[in-house]
Image (tube, rainbow, N blue to C red; front, side, top):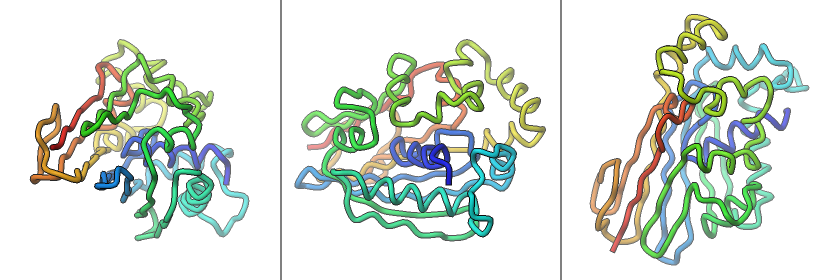
Length: 240
């Protein structure tokens, strides 16, 4: 399996979403434990339409004809996680042809990003005391590239926010229709990312998103928001 396919899945888990060109519904549950370590549980489904799109690019095709694109990618992603110094208890299982779920533990946010290539100064997902903040904008978008070199691949750069600053959603979807076919816009519009934070004590405040229960916060956004990054995608959740 080509490394670029692994990188599309790395982006799923790091940002709680499949922030790439795969139409999907993704849920990421991040548990902040009382000992200040973390546990991640995720599930995602990729539509057949975008699997077909990936097959049009030879770089994404597995060398083993008996291995599907998604099976190969999830297997390689599991291996990549297992190599992380801060990551443990990695498990991924197949639910059906294009759906997978998995879990892994890690020691802290900064080490997780460092293990995946971002370095120690990333500002996308940070923790200060009893506060966790996610912020992705054009100001720190470049920090994703070391983690996900896929984003700078010449085959896909045109789909991302660097190339599409200032373009309207309607114009972007028209471009997608031209490049990927008439199914493309609807597939992208149906792609949603949901990140749930399970806090070790009661939630005291938050910005954006919503509180599901005393210790569960949820933030959702559509894939198109990432592809355009017309405004920052951000939230903060605080607990007692």
